Image (tube, rainbow, N blue to C red; front, side, top):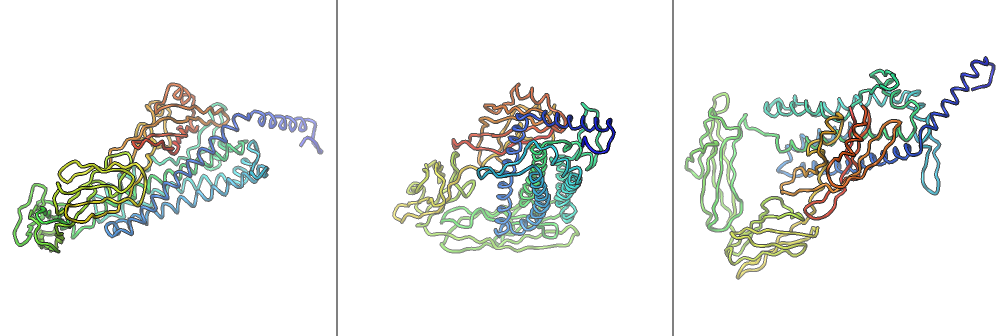
Length: 531
């Protein structure tokens, strides 16, 4: 660069450029590079945890489709979840390829069987992402993936159900504001440099003379944003399985019994009516040949007593007016089976699984009466009697082969298979609400601390945060991990947040929580981008 047929002045300028480049390289200290290695590894680990969580959700969709009780609803929402997965996978795979290209351009080698590369290389990121304009392509793909993810769940697909349609539109509008994918180009206030709000400006602001490890960290953060957005949307889709309504001419005739298996003398209650009841429907309910008056909620309650062993059925006729004023009628058969006195039944009052660390209520009935019935658990815990056919199971050891034994006086012991499981892992949040993404610095400082939230779980089980590691990653700045005991964001953490600037990354890593079962859980990281 300093040789050739050029003027002395140009030679001096070129020499000064070489010296400046060397100085810039020297300014990237080993400590900062090691900090970026830590941050990148943490984000990659967090992404793996999120991927496993999402995999479990997709399995839950498949199970819901296989279940006759949820099949019709699950098919609708599984198709949307699969499309969300395809959209997210496409951009994540593309970014993976670019990360490999970055490493290839940073003197990769294998030492003692371990792959290494020059984490401090200042040319690879600029060459790949700016000169070859791959950064422009990533920018456009991130803009597009955000739009495509939000478009999968379209309220227009539910025009046949105005209430559900309005609810989905409201929720998707909220997602439009909360998804963590944000490609706003931060401006360098210190240097006065102004970058364009496009792919070129984004690439130059993030990757000009940026060490390879810092560039990898930025790309890993983009993947984290995509995976977190995928999680929010597929969780929402799964929650809707219970909200899809199949209606009968805008009304649905409903008839159900409190049990389909009982013993002689047990009460049988049948509730019948019209879904989405309104006065204009004017339903008339006939059960067992008799007209049953409607209650305040528009449903009819019919009570009888079980007698005579074997299968029985009670006819239910529901007559009502459709919205256009024409009459309609639906006939249903409520079927139930009356067992013999030697039989027994076990009913789970909450979930069909026994969970470690919480009280699991059971209802047990037998033909010999409550006072002549004893209940026990074969392994993994114990069952205590609470009276009136009510029992409480307390379990300690996970297993899929436990059995509840019900012994009745004068009869044989009956066994009912049951699974014993750990309580699912909670998710980490700030103050019980904020799950990551972009956040204002003042809002972040105002939070009290970390809260572990157990979503979609029927038991009153609480987890407490026992500690975490806090990190602030700044471009060209130092990263000092802080280990914190307990859930609170102490003054030391808030002081570090006070130094954050737009575009900086805040990470709560190595989050530990203790649940009612006494075990310590490792929770996924919480990652925020300061705006």
